[in-house]
Structure formats: C-alpha cells, structure tokens
Length: 463
Image (cartoon, rainbow, N blue to C red; front, side, top):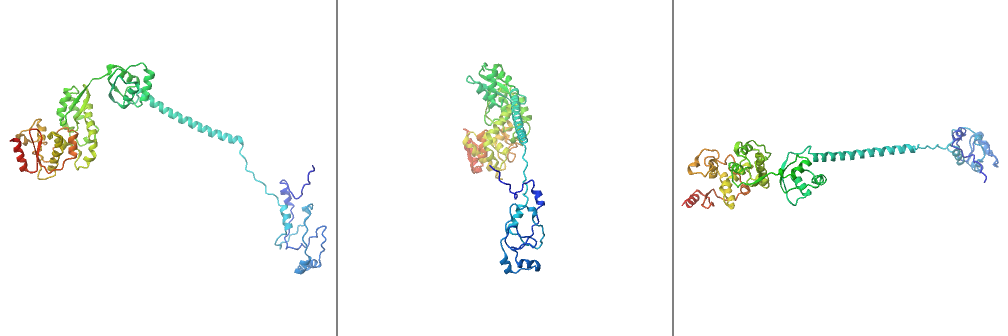
C-alpha cells in the first residue's frame, strides 16, 4: 500500500515553534477587497478593473464598482509554501476573511500537551508496604498490652499479691463440687474469678476430696494455700449462735456475749468505746459506754468462739444499717433527726409489750413533745435505764439527764436497742389525742386524753 503524501499544512510538534517564526503577518482588510500590493492568485481569470486601479490612486472605491467587480477570493493552493506570502503591515484593517483566518489557524502552533508525571510503581508499592507495617505493629502492640494486663490480673489473683484483708467462714457440704466451692468463695469475696479457681483445682488438685464442715479462709491466701485451708479439717473453727432480744441494753448484750464465750465484757466495752466504724448514723453519737446504745440491732447471730470484739460489734451495726434502710426516706421527712427517732423508738421498745400498741404509745410521746402544756414525757423506762431495774415512786425524782420526770423533752440518748417494729412505730406513729397511759397487770395499757381520765385509769389498775 502506498503511503499518502504528507500534507504540508500539518505541522509536527517538533517544528511547530520553528514554523511560527516564519508565519507571515496577515494584514486585515474589509470584506471584498484585496490589498493593493497583492497580485492576483495564479490561474485567476479576474482582470483588475479600472475602478480597482483608480482606488490605488485615489484611495476610494464606489459601492457600485465594488459590487460589480467583486469575485470570491480564490483558495490558496495547498502546495503553496507559506513562506512566500507577503508581509505588509496594514494597521487599519478590522477583520480577516474566512480564507485568511483558516490560513492563520493552520499555521498556529499546537499547544504542547502537559503530562502529570506518574508516580513510579515501585514507590507506590513501598508506601503501601509501610502502611501495612504500621498497622501490623499497632495490632501486635495492642494484643500484647491486652495479654499483659490479663497476665498481671490472673497472676495477682492466683498468687494473692494485692488482695483485701478479708476472713470469712465457708461451709462445705457433701454435695459440693469444685465449681460450687469456687462460687462460694467468690460470693464471700475471697476470690474474684470462680472459673479460674475451679480450673486450678481441676488441674492442680484433681484427686482432692473436701470434707464437709465449716472452714475459716482468708482472702490474702494464694490459690494453693486456700485449697489447703479447705481440705484440711483442722482449719475448721467452731461457732456459736447467739440471740439478742429486742429492747436489750448494751450492758445486757455484753453479758450475753461473755456467757456465750464470744468475747469478754472488757473487750466488748473497748470495742464500743474506741472501735472505728464507718456508718453515717454514728456521726452525732455520744461517747463512753452509751456511744452505740440504740444501734446494736437485736437479732440472731452466729459468732466464732473467742471472736474479735470489734468484728462482733461491727456485725450489730451493719445489721442495723440494713434493717433501717427502708425507713430512711420517711425518717428524713418526719421533721425529727435520725438520732431523735431512734431515742423515741428505744422508749417505745421498753414501754410496749403488744405490737398493736407501739404506734399508739408513739403518738402519746409525739403529742407531748408538740404541746407546751406537757414539758415532761414522764416515761418510767428512762428511770429504769438509769437504775437497771424497775423504779419506785421515790426513784422518779432522782437527778439524772435520762430522767424524763425532771428533764424536759427527750433524754440525751437511746435507752435500749429497739427492734424493727418499734423503729417503724417511731417513723409512722398513730394519730390520737392521748397524752397519758397506764399499764394493766397483763402489760396492756389504758390510754387517756385528760388528767381526770388518767387518774380514773390508774385507780382502776391499782384497785
């Protein structure tokens, strides 16, 4: 196949700039006119008219002559070298003809293409590799930190490097397994992870048999020592069950604990007077042996023989805190302080025998406290607290801060340790108009509104 002839009008990018240096200056002229110094194109049959010649001399051409003599300007031949075009400079021209414009455009150099340099492939791969390496290093570091924290946590759990100083009794039965024993230890606060201790027993002590019984275990023991404390029956410690009735005083409680070999009275009083207990209701408590009166909650307890007296007292206080918890909001809205309500409850506990009378006795106390005509409560139980026995008529005038026959208002502190029913009666007293009451022989009471009614009730009881 023959190669087509190269078109001289198409310039390559290599010689575009060189060709533009030879580009003729194309003069601008009015449509339909030819430059005066431009000869007719070769092969043209159009003669120069007289008017055209005249125009060269005079510089003016009439419209009729121009219209009659005008012929379309012939196209420049393709093979005509552009370097032979004339280069006159006609400054007054206003626009180019279409043929002249095409000539100019053909000789205008093409704008060189700009290419954004491409990033070498090996550089892109290197950047991606660095990014992957960074993510991989971060992942390895994160996993290492997580594993390290778990290792530290489990190591401390197994070897008891940092554990609370807690000691408690764990009871093991015939049906207990490694799993149930582990859960008991976790519930008692001796370990944190029952599954980990269960795993330890199955791996390190698979053939151990735990004997039923009660075992004293400390949280400061590591796993091997804790396991030994559980399967050695010599670690068991004997306990005793003690019941404290409602209304007992601190003196009576001390005697019961001593008689049951829980702790001596001296150690008990030392714990009462000097023990450190973190309970908000003790913020305004007194000093000496009456410091905790009213807050040693009466209940049934299980203590060790020869127990620590401060731990024994702490159990009483913790029990009180839990029992009174449901009454706190109503107590705060009663208009009386927490300690005042406990003092009133302690008097109710010593005065009432039947549960249904507790709110009524509470109403008598509150009625007298709210009436200036009754400055004295005149509660016999306050005098009995002073004496440690039932008072006589002569005892009612003794001088003592707790004697409500000679001192106005409430006594300085509780006179007993009340139970939950008396505490509720102090928070929710009955509504009544009673200001007096007297006990019958069966320990029930007659309630009266006036002094005359009360005198008649006393005569009835004693008659």
